[in-house]
Image (cartoon, rainbow, N blue to C red; front, side):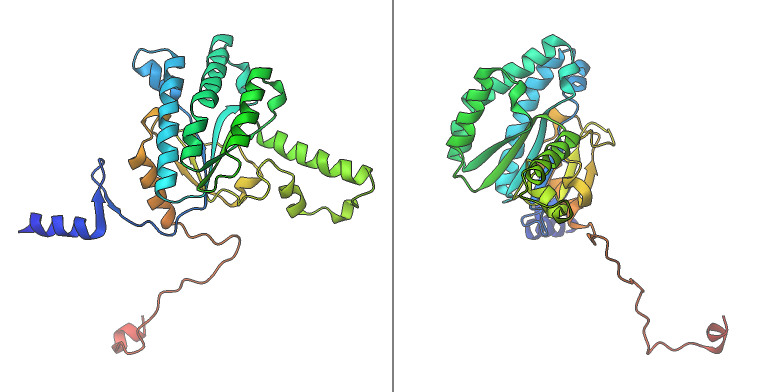
Length: 279
């Protein structure tokens, strides 16, 4: 009898994930913008006796699944940290493999993104990449420019400090040209010169692999993000894991610097004996 009731409860509330947790069909409130640091490809591969490059290839599959999940949950903005400005310091063979994966994704996945109404936005300093990658990047962004189901920000050769610096330089140029006074510069102006200008800041910031840092990713934009850290390595971060992060987000109390008293209500009709009243 109990098992039947439990089954009915699950059907009413949603579905049971592979991790044995009930997942409601509708998750609310949901974030408008999710940012993800995809960490752990190398460790995942090494744990299976594979090379780090094999881990990065498997990580691409996890990215595809994440995009599908965002479309499913109607999340309009997704930002992923694909290649930081510090990643150039990795071994040359790994960097070369990552460049090959980037070219392959731009060549082979652009049509799929366009088919699913995903707008690709490459954020970062693209001038360091070879001309072929720059041409592919230009084609991919132009081909998907009119799509509206999901804005996909792929951060390549990106750093949060660099983003703030290039924003400051853009404003400094306007001041030097006489188009702007220094005392007119405010937070909104800085935001409008960042790579994510015109987009909402990330509501939910996810990092995989058990690390508890944001590694120079969207430093300005993450000022009021809710953070979710998981021990899962990136290739293992599947739809269930993403849904779990979304569910946790629904329980966050986002106050943006405000605060309210949360004093438990006292039943005024409750009778207190004399001993209680003198306690």
